Length: 156
Image (cartoon, rainbow, N blue to C red):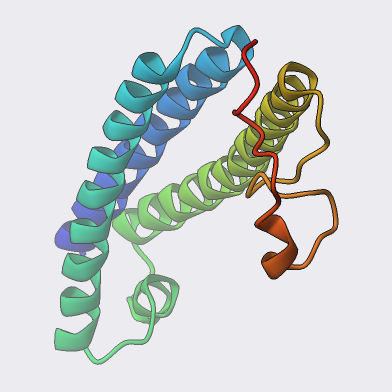
């Protein structure tokens, strides 16, 4: 039971770190400071997600060795004790953090969509041509994207 509690606490710490990094990423996206700040924020998040992935693999091994499908099932199968209550509270906190991370992820996705729309608008204004994401005419078939006047041909 002690090992399960350690795994859950580690998961909670990592989820808390991810939450903080999402806040940093949102701040960078809101400021629009540039690609370098955004790249650094994403790299920090990626490294923590890699750590979380390693932890999940450790949890799978732990549960496989105990012939359980998930951590909740393992904990509920244990006899009533203080450790079991602690583990259940920790699992509840981890679940809450994961829901918050899901919400944070949706918020970051929305901010990225707004940033993309902002960039496309400015490219269209500068080029005086309407273009979609791949910079072809709006709503055109891929073959039609090969137009005579290219978006970046004009001196702006």
